[in-house]
Length: 79
Image (cartoon, rainbow, N blue to C red; front, side, top):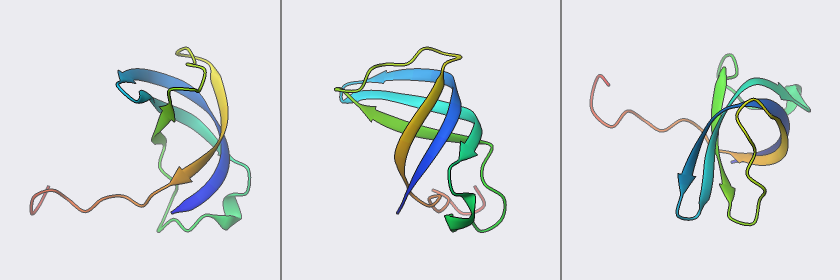
């Protein structure tokens, strides 16, 4: 898990019982040299925002400090 500051454009919003999940694109990382990516950083990131966070609108620029987790392994062989 890496905590990193980032700024990105809100592409999609999903309302969840515990808050919202946003799909972000056009991502700018505050300290890109600190990230431990295996290759290029992803073009999009999904983040879950808690209930006490103001809900952004699609098209807004969002600046957050996020806990990023590595990609999960495929759910099925060859997926």
